[in-house]
Amino acid sequence: MAAKPSALNRILGRLDNLDTTNLTILVQRLARERELLETVINSVHDGILVLDDIGVIQYANTASLRIIGLNDEDIGKTVLLDKWPDLARWVDIEHASDAIDEATAITREIEMHYPEQRYVRLVLLPMNFPGDTYSKGYVMVLSDITEDKESTQEMLESERISSIMLLAAGVAHEIGNPLNSLNIHLQLIERKLNKLEKSKESEQIEKSISVCKSEVERLNDILNHFLGAIRQTPPDFHDVDLIPLLEEVLTVQEETFKTQKIDIDVEVSAPLPVIQADANQIKQVLYNILKNAIEAMPRGGKIKIKPQSDDEFVYLLVADTGSGIEPEEISRIFNPYYSTKKDGHGLGMMVVNRIMRAHGANIGIDSKVGKGTVVTLQFPQKHRRIKLLEER
Image (cartoon, rainbow, N blue to C red; front, top):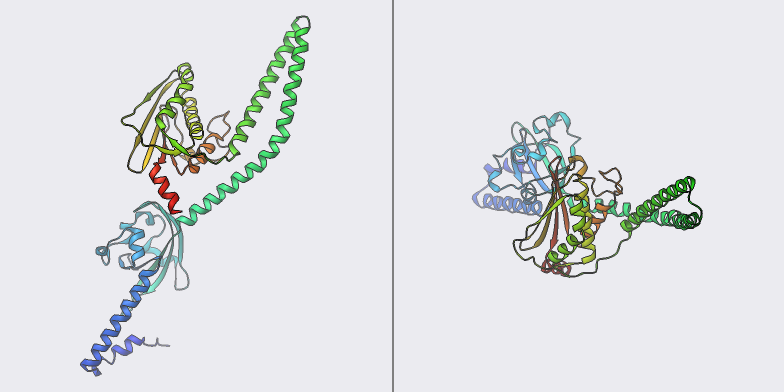
């Protein structure tokens, strides 16, 4: 059965019979309809692209220009994959017809890095361009799902922390009390042993008691780390100058640096703007980061700390010359119980990340195996934090 002619084709077929007045009315009507359709399409938050059979962009609405970073000049002459290399790994336009037909589509969720970091859901649909040959092309619909992705990740993180908190309550009850009891009885045994006459047997028993006390202390330390990691104390915000705070932390760690043969280089080029923070929690962040740096340099090394700022943020860069972190491990650093150290609790960096997020701050980690690691702490300046709170 032959396809029925479209309404537009029926009108165009009668053009020869229209006088000047009716032709003008028709042109105006078509112009209004085109303007209306473009207004509607440009009002859609999703990006809409029309591509020909080799991927040249024939049409793009306003949202797609923003999502991909296109300009009006790109329309009609730019191949999409040339402009958007992130897509090339997922969709081969030239062979898309092998994967889709009139009743199906290609759907992908991809991570974009240009023109900015975001997640996009892509749907590629086949279409026929109207004309004598009805050449094939494609409609691509792009939905920005960055907020949904981030919300889901935050929800999963929250659920994970909640499950740890529930487990911790049981751990505190089941392990904490027996540890205290063990410690008390070991002290009683030790006192009685001291009253007895010294002998080889008593010395052996004394050594065994010492080992037991050491192990109880170690288990108690693990428990305290565990409980400290899951207790969510809201920050007590006050004006904080990071330089004196950093000096205080370094002073406490001074003997450790000497013992471990670690040189400290603090490069302060200018005073830092004040930030809003909980000083004790930021100290905890610094202690954990410095502890990791020290443990990454068992044979000694150097820690360089560089505070700096711009118009919006205050930064604290902590670089070490340690063993570095494998690329595949960096994304797991903040996971509970994940540690690159044999005797690590896997909770320190989770605590750091949680404190930074509670401050509206960010933490970045760059590392190279055998070269060292750079941890960047980014704090919003006081005026920026107040502005964000006012906007909420």
